[in-house]
Image (cartoon, rainbow, N blue to C red; front, side, top):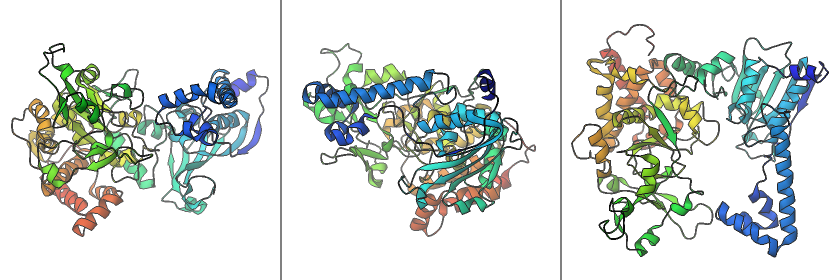
Length: 575
């Protein structure tokens, strides 16, 4: 289906030979904060949406002309939005939270003659965002994409635009001269000269994109040609976690959930001061009161308030990374993380204190019966130390910055998924997928995750054990360092007390898991070495602490040892 079908129906089959432009990048939806920033800063700075709504409603009495201007601006935005979504002129981009650059891009393509070219400067999200996936899919399927060269604005090519902004030079071709050999890509350029570097440029076909992102068909973001080759190799061997249907392929039976929304569910949250004033007592990081008989329903569910977890409270394999500090003086960034030190980690009774608590019955209503869940950190970036951060978290409340894996997986399956998603090999792939600052559900579903059957095979380096039998003791020791995880450990079939927190031992266990996952994902030794060099912050911290890149050295040593022990596998075994 290409746009010229509509053009002919409209009575013309022509179009322009060249369409060039740098369209405006604006959201069509009225941004209340932006609208009031200069006109009424107090409303712009309201603590949350509900408070802002109340202040706006009061303008009817307090400032009628400003209220009228607000209504007019909102009417204008709603009218534009209605036109864009419902006129049929923008079938691919007129959806979601529309940005003007997307509909300009679609218009340019509609105006293009059969042998013409479009050249436009648009944010790189045109290729990587979920909202523009239909347009990008149509470009690749229709062989309309010639090249996409992505720039970070660090060298201030656009002086008025934030230096972190990512934009691209997008070149499209008309329907009569399709790009048959795929499209040219380069990412993270700072200067136009970077486009001359052959290591930065690579070609991806529509088939490659469908292999790498089968659900969204959005574009992965590779820094180098080698990154693209390693990643393609992984996807040829390993399926995605959830392949959307029909028919859906979801071998682990997973689903994801944002349990509580920090703004919309805020009426359910209680602070420590509020609970203590009502006679609640803190045990660990859970509030309890009474015996449940006095005026409750007798089940005890009403008599516990569980911590409301936020992503900043966890790190890989660690649900006790930080508490959350409430600073009375902080204007903007309320609730900074308060890191738990080594002594706190070594004490199995210490738990982090959150900003808010939420009733046990509210958690149970959303989560159902559980001994522990897999929490993800939603806020991330491909330039962070690590991009995918998951941990086993006891059944607590979870804010939307910490989406949780719900659904059917057993405790042992959850543990295997935690070990897999925290591996360097999966993280390496995730970095090519995270365009912005969020590890979204659609990114997680498309990560390459070995299917359950891969874990029931004999371990190639230890054939008398299955892969799972080899991985699980290592994977359990890392999260089970406090008594709050005891129910989860029992569900995994382990009856002992929590494991001691020993930094050296933890590094060793993690490197053993990483070496194993590099093998299981079919990565050769030179590529393991290369992959580890793509984690510069891990390297820098190691060099500061140990005088060498110890994580990499240990993983390679263990990788070699596993290689030596391996029973020769069948070539190119695919799970």
